[in-house]
Length: 228
Ligand SMILES: [Zn+2]
Image (cartoon, rainbow, N blue to C red; front, side, top):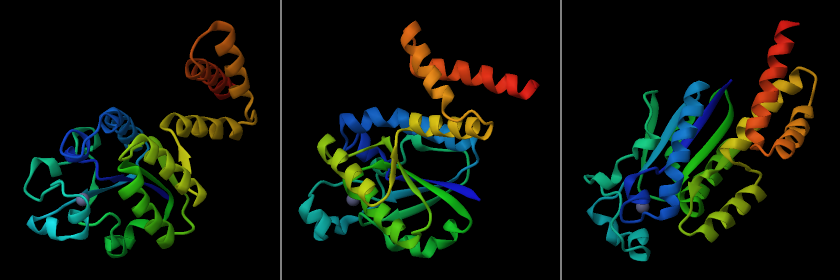
């Protein structure tokens, strides 16, 4: 079974361009960490790329949002460097929020155990494509990597996360996903969530970050189990 990372519209215009925001700029480094995480674990990649032409202002989107963005021949359309990968990635161009192009790419979902999503904007294109994928692949769990998404406003970002959670998305930060993965390994070795509890105590007692305490204890435990 494979895991699939879908990066929605991680393009210059949504970060530093005509529809950019400081929240999106702050999110870009997290997307870079997500890419590294997924590359290390052999995920498959898909990028959606918002793409408009000169007819944009005649469309419903253009009439309601008269801001030129992601024009087909512009640098604003380019994928931000933080979201690029040397791995193979399928590029899906779209001129609407959610795209029915997923239907022509249904081979992507064969033998997939988990779908992860990040990108922009949480309350428009992320949620629109989440809903389409949820309808297409109801049996594949979808995780929204919350700190690797930004919305058109911080409030709408939070609202969209709540709505997706209500529609059974797993909404997790990248750190939560990593911790969950470690707990899964540890649970498999018979000590359940003990390490989380120990790390909480150690982190408080020695005033060190929880993640550092967790990693130290986990490494010690893991290594000792390997030796015995
Ligand atoms: Zn657009």
